[in-house]
Amino acid sequence: MLTKSFMATTSVAVLLIAPLAHADKPLPVTVFNAPSQPVPVSGTLNVGNSVLPVEVKNADPIPVSVANGEGSREIFNISVDLTTGGGSGTCTNEFVIPVPAGKRVVIENVSGEALLKQPSRLVAVRLFDSQRDVIFVPAAAAVAVSSLTGEFFFGVAGQQTHLYSDVPLRACASASAGTSDDIIVIISGYYVDKT
Image (tube, rainbow, N blue to C red):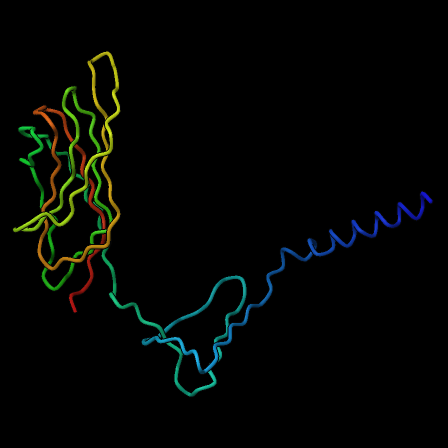
């Protein structure tokens, strides 16, 4: 009985472990797309990797290709320390996000953070053009922080977005009361060719 039980346990263990012995070997992947469900692409696509060769099959004599609709990207990340100005939620200090000739700016993230002496709190970070707010990001609830130099409020504001602009934009941050402390404003995104 002990021998049969041992053999059954050993057989189950071998069956469970055997597939794991081959787990580190990559297997080829083939993707077929039916003619009734074509992939709408244009341009040229280079497909490859360092592990397995990649083969793209196309039954039609039309080449398989892909294009990036925005073209090449020039990534940027602007970080500016702004003084809070007069308080009362107004933006008295601002900076410009330029748009080079022939380019379009794509803003992907607008954020700000501040450690302000109480009672001042971070109100918002704004992104605007010459006529109106484009993005208004209100600050989250402030957190009280005590230190040897005083009582502070730590505040943050942040928003992911996907905003296109052909004109320069301005950014600023506002506080609830005047203070000489700084607010760090960060704008990130990329430039693309204007089409």
